[in-house]
Image (cartoon, rainbow, N blue to C red; front, side, top):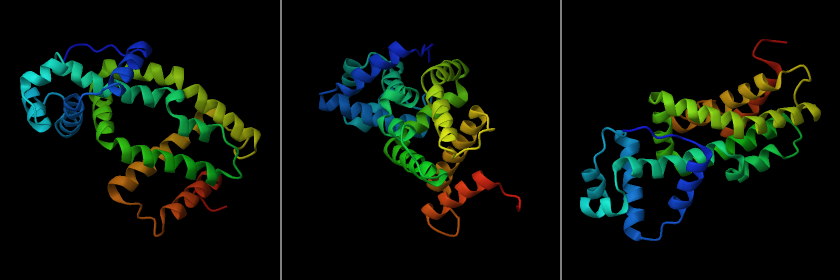
Length: 220
């Protein structure tokens, strides 16, 4: 795979191309590619296998996408855009801008949102996570976009939590945000891959997580 430079303009362009698809064959090729790239990775997936899964000839595939790399880009970039740009994550931005009675409400809302996103985009998230693990260049570019477009929103959210006295005033917003991200991502992945194993419902587990974050694991 050649170099795929990741920047805001290229991500936005690919979103428009991905969402503007009208041809049934074009959509079938995209869905087949998403499935196979997620299961086999980029190198393990051939255009012939994508065409077969989509029910088209390889010649037809190349009429819609000039190369496997362009097809991969068409799938990967829109997901990256929705991941790093708050305007494209309307539900989570609404959650970040909301008013809460306690930290449990915050966690419950954010965890429910991320579970919904995981269930909707699970296959494509496998593609993104694979790229971020193995592609140093793309990981650096993605990180830069994250820091520019989403991280400031999360820090503002933590400041509001402190203003509402849901978080201690002496907590560094960056460290507090990191704790929430680790807890939310960890909980979602554990729930979806292994089950909660919490001895109760998901809601009960979220409440326990909130208590642990607020009071720690050690006895008071």
